[in-house]
Length: 512
Image (cartoon, rainbow, N blue to C red):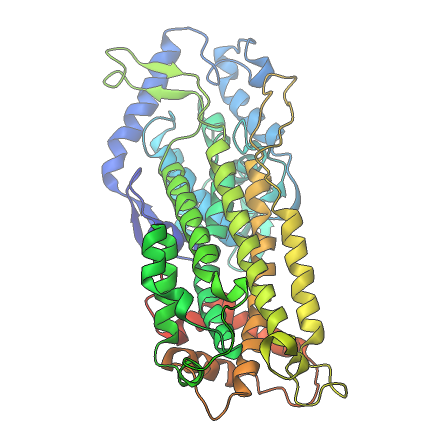
């Protein structure tokens, strides 16, 4: 059980929530929640029109709502805005979205009641996952449709995944011993406005991108060994002059992975090649740049995850200079998330792209010095011919998907909301890109291990031989052609699970 301190949740804690840990709010947040709710009541007592509390929404903000219709107003916005479409969002992403919303509400700037926060917290702890369609948000005014589906489940409408079953939300709440929420003033808007859907998807991809980067260091080092490439380009003196932190750390990691290799020692002195192709030689520059960019994305997303992004924001009297205030702004605009998602997309694309080039070198005897397509009997056998084609296809898909989502915008809400971030789409597309890149690395792992097999009895470093051993425990060396797909699935699983990184046993660079 993780204690969520609103505004101070760490990268590792968000990742743990995504991976299935439960989280409860720090009890110290309770007074702020109560003060914010009380401020809303006092603002209502003043009788002034305040957006989202006693007015319509979006283009209808000028419509005043009677006091006896305020509860209905909040219910109506949830039901009308629960207009998503597409496949249900993955359960871990929904959990992370709920935790992000919980931590945001608990900062005492959203005007929701303690009971409302408590219900969301209990749903998270007890494993009640609202069914949230993955499409329908433009990333401003917040992730309205996805968060409305979450909120609809809280009031007993829609569906919830609970105890391994999908069921009506009201039934799931009852089975868990919880009562549907009766929304108070401001609460519907507070729950459905914000960037938590976009941020959850972007963070999920970031967690995977960190694993991908580290796995690519391992497969890249193993490919360098298979191609009998030089480790001279990883010399620290080269990278110190360039000064980029990610590049320096990446080169150090590659040196450590290859340290003590008998394969490298066998050609260190009399290698006739002066320079290796870029995909081997420039790994520190390419992968280091990816690391720097992922770290920037992590900084942006961690800031967003710990912020408050709904509207209007409530400032209780002690925060507002003696008078309660409801301030309308634009914190729901997810431009920072959109930029971060686009940065992650670039790294996923490039990590896969340079890996595919290493595969291409290994299957080409003119470049690698290895048998054609890494098979002992070329011609009779095709070996790695088509897996390289598959890697090329996946890389090209990622190139198309890497086009920045943040440069797009489309007016909504009768031009009241006339510039939007497209953060939700930008973040959601990353899952497919990540899966493509993981598959490319799985193919590289197979090809690099196969290439090293041809160098026997010479062995690579202790770290890389451990990686080969982990692979060979599941996938045998390819002699004659066989059904290739199961080999690819096994290797991809080793990449996705982090088993490749774990087998290497190295302290590889991390994002945070």
